Length: 123
View (cartoon, rainbow, N blue to C red):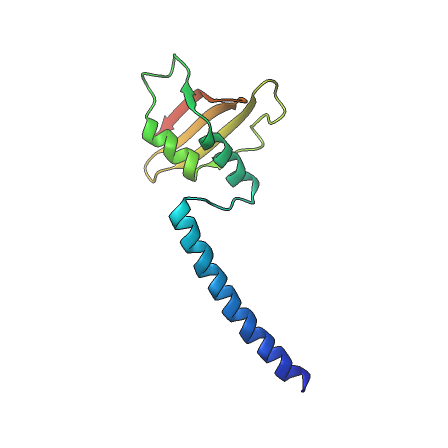
């Protein structure tokens, strides 16, 4: 059997397998709510969302919890401004945009909870 014919069969089988795998994993993630996070930004945001969120007492009156949840899902971690080696809690700065607002928050990622220490909204 010539090489090009075997390569064609291989590529057809690979395509069918990838389509099946994509559909299977998409259905599984929709049912169970799991997500596959391999990049650092996604992994940090997922870890921050997995712990209970505490808000600093000075910020409780001015924070919008929906915007914070949006940033924890869709935000970008600014690793240049973050201190990932801080003890006892790592410090992460997260920024994002809702279209009309620019948002920035600072979170401390402690062992058993996440603490919101800074909250800034620009129109």
